[in-house]
Length: 347
Image (cartoon, rainbow, N blue to C red; front, side, top):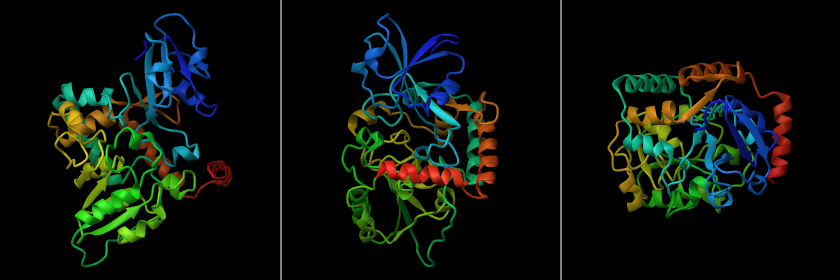
């Protein structure tokens, strides 16, 4: 990461994201650049960019490249809805969803020491998150009850099929419908629940190929249900690369990963989609709270919505709870109007 007071060049950010970049690099001088070709020619510059939209080859060969993405406890509301985040991750090696190369998170999980004090802190944080039914976006107003007499319920979370997490983290199945067919074929007697991605439900992102036929491969499709409440009612989560798998692990659920998400390959999940190369990189067996320590304490950066300053995961958790309580009173009219325009743009 760049030293305090140093200059970074942020490439390709929209005007909406620029204040957030400044907040997450508040100890640095930030210069915004529209595209890599406009970077200064001097050596050893530090470049910040979003995800994997811009490849390494487009940046100067000796540049330090930091890739940003949403953290795993992000907000009350969707990123596609332009809701400001509480956390981002800043990665100097790769990014957590790109299984084609190591990330800072993978290296920490695979090689760092985790003292007892850190593991105990992670356990306490995990227990608070589960008790409060918090997830990444904390959307959904409805509840869900499992049908009486059903012995085994499997949740299949939908994903946005064009997202890089599928392109870079799934080697075989790459569609929601394909995943549903696979899960149904391997679990003919289970009660399968499919939950479309919230961005798709909100009309902000396109549905997947053949996703309208999802009901043919599952027992129920659920919509406006809070993920935290839903996870409490199911027995297993089967997914490609969705963060829901990590959220399910925190709740003690069985998770089957048909892709290669950051939480797979450590002995905590069943991994039919894991490649030999990635399995070799992730050969270390982890406890759940070591995974939580890496993913929620060491890897993300948290910035307060109240003060604009860096905060701890525990402080972020308190802000999320207060935010959710305020949000439960309804979506403001201005945000409903914004969502309408975003839908028009997505369509």
